[in-house]
Image (cartoon, one colour):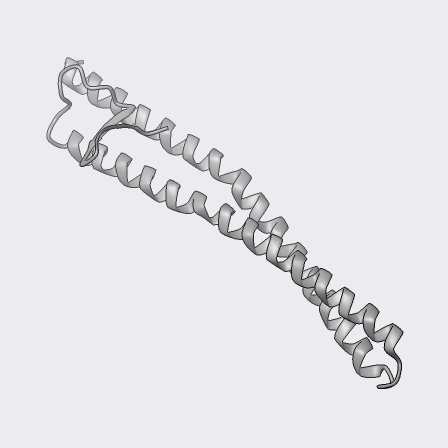
Length: 133
């Protein structure tokens, strides 16, 4: 097999490995995001129950109203925490898309033939040579 064909096959194998690694790295953030969404749904249900309790109370009943307000405040705090986790967890998507774009540019460059001494794990970009993972 000619050296150019072997180099191209090695580069393609390296790209496939990098894609598999990117997908493996995305599993953790997706799990965190799913857990945060489940907890947000539970917090919203808790808020709904607190609102229903408030509606059922007589206007002169101050003690239960204070409890309902405390429940609603706890729900608000929980939602703020979970939304922050969701935002953080969604950042993996941006990183993954950047990595996939780099691999795609690398593979597109293979159509022109591999460069002598090129490391298939590194891709040239406008920022210079960047480590994919």
